[in-house]
Length: 226
Image (cartoon, rainbow, N blue to C red; front, side, top):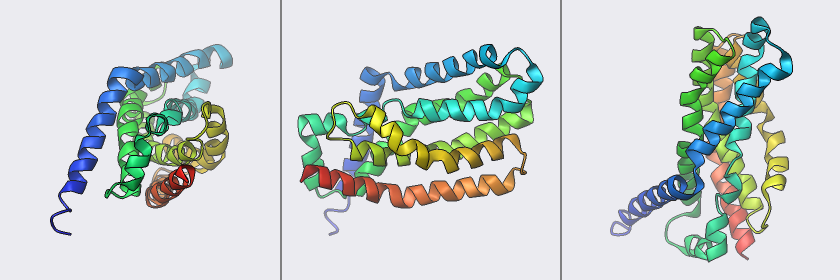
């Protein structure tokens, strides 16, 4: 057991580096997510009008909805490449626990998609006239909540891994489950119920997703491989 222990972290680190490299070179996940985020924020004033007070009031909700939709980008390909080239079977049968593999792939997806959205949210929030203290709440809530969106999305990606065009089905599966995260994320961002209580609930939801989602996604991947 002692001789095998170092190989597991090394394998996980190699998998993380591989997914980050592939995401940067092929998927364009960073630029695609941020540009999609920007597009959703930019078209909102055309829909609700140039009222800055209204935009500032609904701005946190707009940023959260845009982040939720931008996070969906690329989730259908989270396990798709491995399933198509057969390496998913090798990952499933490897000595590295599949739950850890799922967690590492979720981390790579969040680093490429979720983290840029968190960093870009204050700048895009200024476009909506949001106050500086509210922008800090938006960034903090997104930093805590977007990992949960990725983890929940991993379950949908695992369930639809055997489908060639499972993106729409994935969205239908995970959007209803993401509603509590959206509710408490917006509540923490705009401060209507205070910041601490909804923020702590959001932290709890993320921790619950961190504890449960890798096991659920791994079970779905094992079932898909049978």
